[in-house]
Length: 125
Image (cartoon, rainbow, N blue to C red; front, top):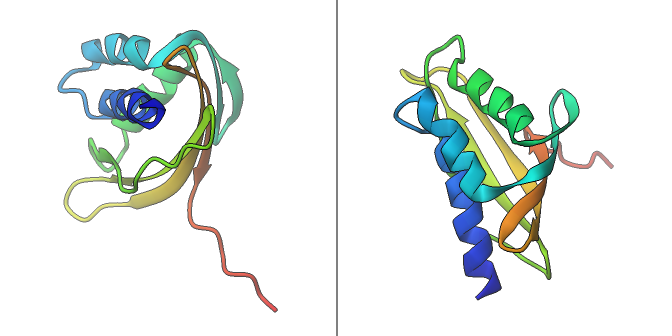
């Protein structure tokens, strides 16, 4: 049951990246995130839905064109933390980025997002 709630919040969050119009981004984020969400992204720490919205809109305006964000793994959820993998692909074979997000849920909404973008290099022995 808890995993289904997490999956729903995560998929709604991801759908903001793929909204048909920028005007839908805030509403989708508000359905997935708490108002005081803490977002640890590639540019550091920020707080609030407006900060996450700026990040999402920046990704949507990628120089290579509007891309597609998809969850490409199951949601793994021990207790109130969850993780999943994602892929962002721009049109026409443009840049592709993959990563893993770790999220914390509070009352069925995401209140923390930690973005790990890129692949982890194999351990060199």
